[in-house]
Length: 318
Image (cartoon, rainbow, N blue to C red; front, side, top):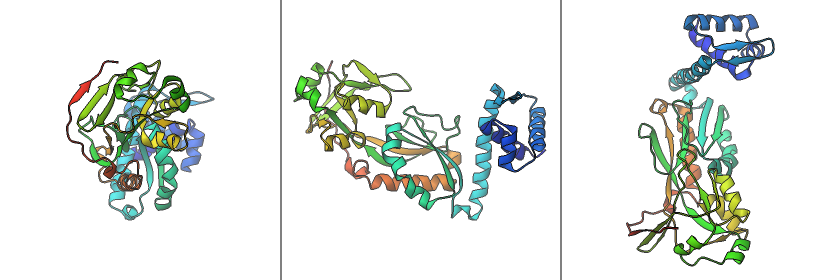
């Protein structure tokens, strides 16, 4: 039994949920597909699939083996790619994860330029504000905002996230315009909490030598960046969010920037990938493309966020 071929067939069966469709995709007889999967189960002494007359579903052991097969097959393709002319024309499946707002506002609208350059790459873009485990979930690379927590990953800084504090004109007409960050304690603010830890993020403000950190009060908290912005646009309260998500509403008058002479410290944006992906041509070209994309974006290129000298930090209770 060719173990790699058996793995590829097994993955195709899981992806399609059918021996028949897998055989059609692989252009193999259905009997060959079924026999190789059975041989794989026998070699592993484990049942990988539940079979009925109507459907094929993966077992618990099969699901774990499926994820490992994805990584093994990806590594094999990457090894072959690194020794072939495909380095000049990267190809194959590329699994990427990025925050929801960054995906919808920046990455997806620009993807036509990526596919013009690299038509042979099949991109799977997962969008989540939850930091995924690249190794466990078989992700090739991820775009991440904020300070990096996993030091085992290779990281390239490609941009920054700047923030805007804003509210709708109708909200401000009812509640007034804050003149100082401390005034926010008397306002209704929309909170954002970490999808991973559940912790609500404080807001920070800097002006000259003064730096204020405020825990915010509010009647609603969300953990999805797009939903968070929509809450602000709906007039549910004041928001503090990435300017690439909010600036279009400020420009059209649907929202008004608050405390424009104060700013929040920017957060870095990195593309990260496991160390065993560092030779992959498809990862390399994606990282380069993202770096170019952010460098051309006035909201995100690194030059928009120069280093800020340390200032006294004042914590304010809401």
